[in-house]
Length: 79
Image 1 (cartoon, rainbow, N blue to C red):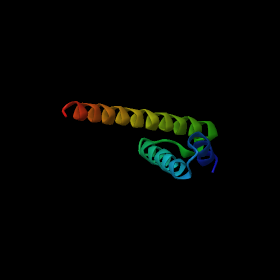
Image 2: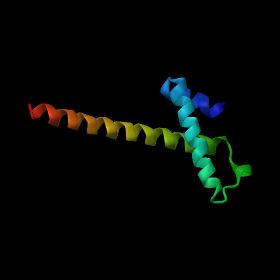
Image 3: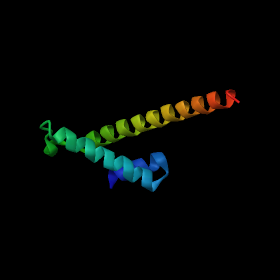
Image 4: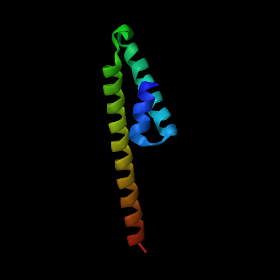
């Protein structure tokens, strides 16, 4: 609940907050395969992991938007 609330405050969108939370748990599941000790995970660790995923998500979206803008500009120049 804590991390979902953080994501909701950052995004203002409940669906996006849920998607980000799912990404955090997927990341933790991947890390558990590398012997992550779940007993040592605390609120700060969850927050840092979640914030990192949030920032990466924003960067990815920004790059995708820039690529789409370049494509649309180049396609309009051809006409």
